[in-house]
Image: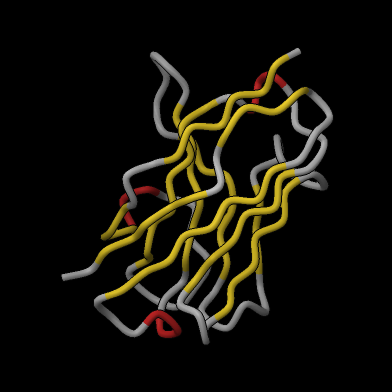
Length: 124
């Protein structure tokens, strides 16, 4: 059974930073791309960032480019999202997801497994 567990969310002031973590179990972590998505109230799930199986390649949504950094530690089965210069519009529930293959992917339909989500709230 594949499980993804996120941590690191919380309340932060605008301009601050948070680091999210997502630890997986149940399959070979290093064989698959990983992604981070977010969903604000009354909105659809939005792509944030993705990283390929080795960590060599990353891709970001325009809204977070230059502020967020996705990384992974295959030895720890963990993917991270470092979020800097946070804005109130970054307030959402953040989800990590495990991809269907090794390559970068921004489409939710290409992710088979999802975490439970962690709340990030940025105050102005």
